[in-house]
Image (cartoon, rainbow, N blue to C red):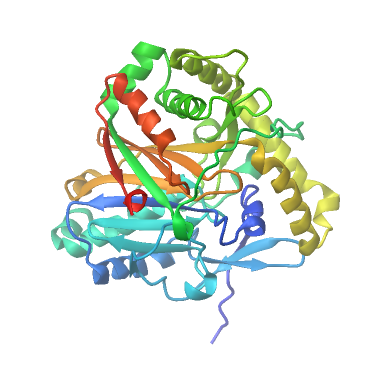
Length: 425
């Protein structure tokens, strides 16, 4: 019998850092969840994961380390075991406990959770996997759906695994990253390494109207400004010119560079608020946020950012350095730059599903794990007219989150709050 040659692939430019810095305290995982209108059946969900995993080349992978670089190799083992959720989200994915896969699937009542180690894909890529698992699950639970839509992947699902950074790289560029230390939120941590989650559910039409008509801003600019303003209100004496609030905002590069890759393809820009007087109104902070982001989110600047990253990787001296030394150098560089942002707020955009599945799906939400210096992070996702603004936090105090949603409510937006309960234990 002929021996099966396992396929392998290089890590994309962004993914190279994640294996270096990952650990129990900084897991580099994110979660995307779909909430169904019915209780999840574990056996059917496991069957769906078993059916989808081998067909998704971007996720049927294991992480390996070579002499010079990490790389990914076709896994080929049985799909990860589906489990009922019983612990905090976004914990480190231990390969030896997960059939060497770098994603896991769990469920809780009507919710299906997908957690992904960022080395595999960004939120756009992860959404493709969750969507296909959900579709397959619903076809198993409702055979009439299979008769209606068949059993293949939906046309919107990409299996493309190109490194779009490499394809679109033009020339070496100067660094545009800020390295000066930002204000970092501090406080009493939740006991037992707790992971607090707060979801704010907002009508899209209301939040869009407020952002555009009242402030002349996009929804994303408005929501980032709300975080900056709430942080400034909560820590007025600690947010200073030397310690500004700086919010890292990931930008999906696919619309700018005609890509449908399922690998990571994003860069970070930062909304920066440096207080230069004694007090600021929310309106002023929205204007500062708008100016800061719009100056950076241009195709030319985004290309400069990732071209700088790619040029570093391509530097011939770095290629010849053994992985063990690369890890030391990359961790040192990361630790220097990690404290340059107060938080990260990522928006995965408006999520759509194929029409036949809509009657079975209630909504989506997502959040990302903490990282060095950033013990509170925000995520945004929309589905069927509802925007979910979610916060993951390591702190007992929820003053920042309360101020954010109070500001949004004071602007006339209906706000509904949900938490995972750890703040009240």
